[in-house]
Every structure is written in C-alpha cells, then in structure tokens.
Length: 222
Image 1 (tube, one colour):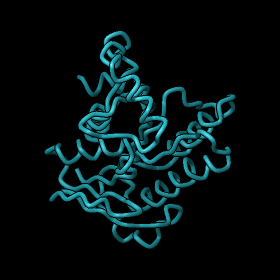
Image 2 (image 1 turned 135 degrees about the horizontal axis):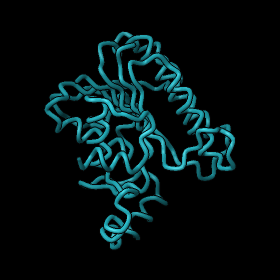
Image 3 (image 1 turned 60 degrees about the horizontal axis):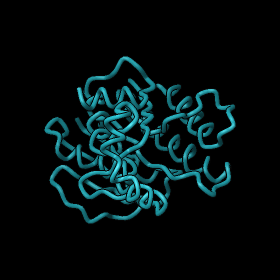
C-alpha cells in the first residue's frame, strides 16, 4: 500500500506512523506536516505544507495513493465551537475533498472519538462537531471510508501526548492501566493497536463504517 498520513506528530499519529513503517505491506508513507520532524526512514517522505485549509500547492504530489490515515486533531478544552470546528471539521474536509478528487479509489480512515454524536444535535460540542465531520466524510465518493472511535488510548514505545493535561492523566493512570485493560478490554486500547487496526482495515476493509472501540480492539488483537 501507498499511504498518506496526517497528524504524524500527535500521540495517535506517532503510533500509526510507527506501524506503517513496520508493516511490510506498506511500501510508501507520505506524511503531510507543517514542519519537518527530522525522522528518517526509507519508506517515509515528509511534505512540508503550512496551509492546511488549502492543498492546491501540493496537489501534484498527492495522487497515486491507496489510503489516507487521518489522525490530526486537537482537544476541545477551552475552545469555542467556531475555533474547534475550524480545526476539526474544516481542515479534515479540505484534505478529504482534495484527496477524493485525485484518488477516488482511495480508502479514507479518520480517527474520531468514543461518544461522537452522529445526530449532530447533542449537548456535547466536540461530539457534535466530530459527528458532522464523520457524516460529511462518509458522503464523499471514496472507494471506502471508515470512522474510528477509540476510547482510552495508552501511549506505548516512548510516545507521549503533546497536550499537557493528557500527559499528566497518562502519568497518573499508568499504574492502573493494566487493571483497566483487564476489566474493560473493549474500551482500552494502545497507540500500537490503533495503528495496526487502521492498516488492517485499509488493506482488507471492514463490515462497519463506524468502528467503535470494541471493534477496533477486536481488529487489532484478532
């Protein structure tokens, strides 16, 4: 597979990139970044691009791909709905609309979140915005599109969250995470498992378009 990755510097994206580079079925990974990460791998190409609302300038480098793994996102804490929508919805759809025109045969995989609101009318702001993002992605004429809704994600292999409050949360919960995984296996996953599950679905598809946490765990561990 030839894969485009968005969000490779985030916690989930780091895990997904790691699995892409390890997977023998992935022959090429193009990571769209605002600034070079400095990471080197024979499979990896980074395209530096500043304006994530308009990809016209790099369109000539975005065709011929089998899958897009979209892991870019931010916490909604302290953000207005307008600001959160601009990052969560506008950037995602700008990328997806560009890619579907260049790669209609592509599979698009989007990391959303557990409790995302598909009705778009619930009380939770972030869940409404994520729901609208999912709904509009599913309307695009990709060969296939899948929405991943992980629950609690444990970072592995030295990966850390860029969000300070999340780093603190992971530090505090680390001692009980094994117990949580034992008690609630369908709701606790890892950065490694998210990457593995996304690649397996990109390669072979899945029976559901909305992949909840329990489905994700089943795919990764199965």
